[in-house]
Length: 129
Image 1 (cartoon, rainbow, N blue to C red):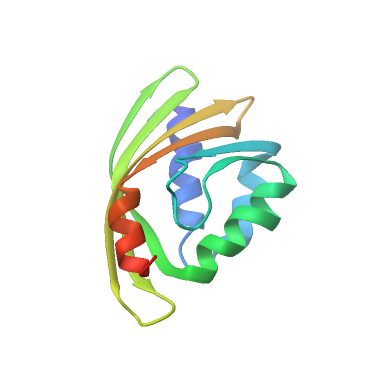
Image 2: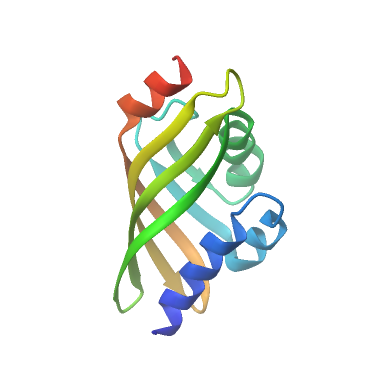
């Protein structure tokens, strides 16, 4: 397994509920999240502190979910992850099962950027938004 892929796999292991404290240490302090504009928990570009204080509280406040990874494709600094977001909504307990593709950039052994592709319409419908 390539080192960059291992770093990304470590991230997904750290996103399991109860183990999320490691997430920050795997990412650059200036990590960039690029999310689709239709994302019901907040779309757009988030960087550094805005990821931890803006996007993540909204995301995990709405969802009790985990990322189930199915495939990793690695080329240089890029790692593409294909999988599903699986769990429940916090309000109402509706099932969540939404496909995703994440394109990570790993630079100098830390996660520096992720571009998120997902079915925002399905996620919005599940969240009742």
